[in-house]
Image (cartoon, rainbow, N blue to C red):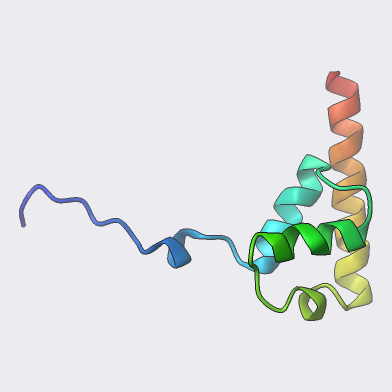
Length: 76
C-alpha cells in the first residue's frame, strides 16, 4: 500500500444527532431544549424533533446540561 492515508467521508466522521445533542449538553451550549433543537437543525442534523421527543432522552439531556453548566461555573 502506498503512503496515502484513508480519510473517511465527512458524513461518517460527523456525530449522529443524539451524539451531538449530548456534546452540546455537556458544553452547556444552550438555555432550553427548543434552543438545542434549533442548534441541531442549523447544523443540518436529521429528524431532530423525533430524536428529542422521548421523555427519557429529554431528562438525560437536561441532566447532562445541568452537569455541564455546574462544571463550567466551578471552573470560572
